[in-house]
Amino acid sequence: MKREGAHKVREPRRPPTPAHPSLAIVHASELLTLRGPRGPRIREAMSDLGIVEDGAVYIEGSRIVDVGPSAEVLRRHPRAGRTIDASGKIVLPGFVDAHTHAVFAGSREHELEWKAQGLTYTEIANRGGGILHTVRATREADEATLAGLASDRLATMIAHGTTTAEVKSGYGLRTADELKILQAASSAGRASGVTVVPTFLGAHAVPPEFEGRADAYADLVASESIDAVVSSRAASFCDVFLEPGYFDPPQARRVLQKAATVGLGLKIHADELSDSGGASLAAELRATSADHLLHVSAAGVDALATAGVIGVLLPATSLASRLPYADGRRLVDAGVPVALGTDFNPNCWCESMQLAIALACHHNGLLPAQAITAATINSAYAVGRGDTTGSLEAGKAADVLVCDAPAHQHLGYRLGGNLVGTVVRGGRIIETRALTK
Image (cartoon, rainbow, N blue to C red):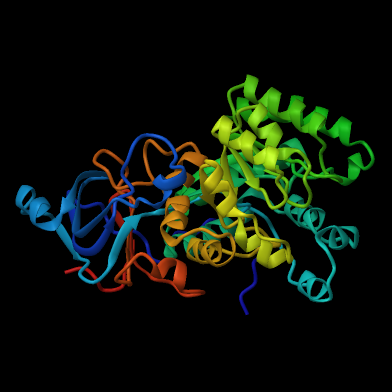
């Protein structure tokens, strides 16, 4: 049995091919371009996948050069260095996982029995499980070990179609350990081929040495920790777990306001276990995203829509933690731009955005096209990369998937498998199933 132990960063199981001067993907039954106006999609626009039948993508180096009907693209670019025949298949942008905690040591499989017995998230934490259990193991691991573990996980994610992933810290809860996690995340991204967007989540829980002193710990995060993160250029965003028993709105506001003053983007774990005011605070501070939203109030939904804050849904967490599912239909109808993530972490071991898409269709009320939009262009904007990835348009990164299905609805319809046959990341073929010629 494989054990997740100490080891150095490894290369992906199937190394990417060398970049070709040019690559053409042709004759897709449905080419889902997701092209459209700049910015995340809302309301009816979330259902517009920009489908081109018998479509093609032409790539030079790491960038997309041309997109359109195969006959037209082949006429303009008749001599690609390599060609992928996507007949009978769908082609779409690489998935962008907008919320993960992929760097940690250890695992928490023993908690599954407690869940089966009906214990809640809070009750499991009170038994010594939850976040602080993982903190202990992660503090003991060195950076190389953490990077190796995360690289393996990201390699599995890219094999399932994830080409960009946000990765949070939050299992160190000390400045040095949080930096260690963020640096490991960057190393793991380079080793696996996944583009990693690092997020500082020092305010994930109150560490044991600050028990009963959440205010003091929030002040530490808002001073020493954020200063160190910015000085080392280790993160793009700052996040806070706003929830009773973790951090309250005034504490979260102090941390996030400091983060904003030093140039970090803002995210909030909002209204997951209760209506804790997370969505309203996210709107007030003009955060990039508010994530979870299982118990968001009507006022919170309206505030998110007015402020243009992206709502990141994490249906695998609802499945793993026996929690309600966020009402995605309500968010879409209100005009909130909706994105998706796996929330991959030791409590929710989900490495597949395909599963997140399927759960969003079966339980969050999203239409298949809306779920695909949420997993591509909207998630790209949720991690600050919407101008460079998330859609198939000239000038954008050549992150492309070829999936073994004739129509896009299969991504929401099928549960538990892997439809991805070929992954192209930055113009390089990462994972293939004999589709090339």
